[in-house]
Length: 196
Image (tube, rainbow, N blue to C red):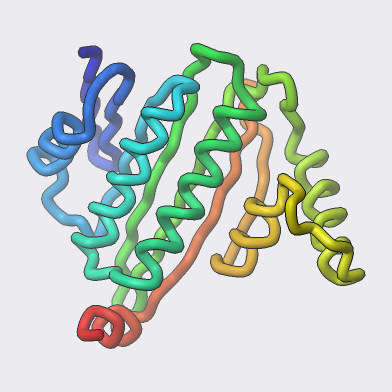
């Protein structure tokens, strides 16, 4: 098992390579005191098993913040889409990727953001400029009612962009593609949904 932990005043970093969900959860529980305001950077390799651990962690973080159905399932779906795209398209087998999850609470809102960095070395790697052009093309297909059932490539654009407040793409200095989403909830929304 290759689990390491790095804590600074802003972010917990955990490498989940070749480990299991419960071990990672135990580390997180020991090191995150305030689940309403934290950042967690997850290091993972291009392995779909590790995407399941990330999905489960996102579900756990949402539960700790009283985000239940339907939004917990939606965030798990979105996270899965981002991570799986990094594994399938943006990275080679064995490459190291990152998923960073931020929860930030203000007086009025809980802001959740998730960013996934792929290695930008995969067979289908594309720059942020290319991703923006692809997003525009996919959104035009929806506007023109181009049939897209039974076609791949609609999850990131058609599903994710409808559910979040922001979706953007950025090229990192070290060459990685960063895909970032953000969604905010008022405290009233959270309380209302937690009581359902």
